[in-house]
Length: 194
Image (cartoon, rainbow, N blue to C red; front, side, top):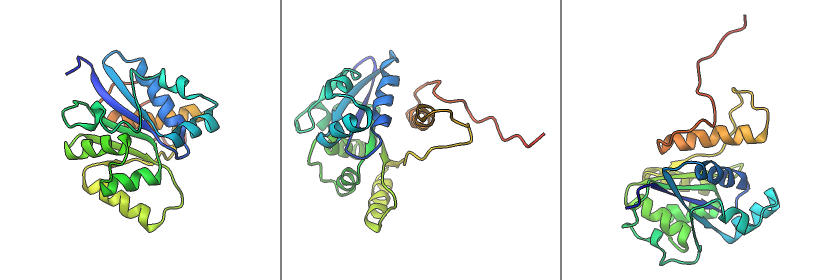
């Protein structure tokens, strides 16, 4: 096993590519985390559409990059030791594949491995409003041990930018993996008007 903890990060075609990219940026600054990136083809399109970035610019943020079609990659095996996986953002198609155990590409296979090995799987699902299929797929993944984490912005910290809103969500994600960070202040309790 690597001296660093491995974390798998996948970026799919839902809106919200900034979550995956900023997560990779934050993790690249940590010396004890090794990131393994898998980008779907729709994820590449969204990264370009929303952030103006090319595939190579995102890939250089990760320690190791895997091809989404390489179903024989190391991530596809339960013997690949990792802290788990974050899919940020997670499309409803990817959610459905995880819920049904389809494992039809490396993203959904790696997610399936996390579930079967009882490792942390966090899905930043992006869609609104939700239909019954979405809700049932979220329920199925939750029952299997995954964490459904819609990136809903918290406004109580009075964010001054989109990046601050995104980082607040990512701080909570990193907490789920017990990864130390300083992305957002800790809640100190509510203060009434003076």
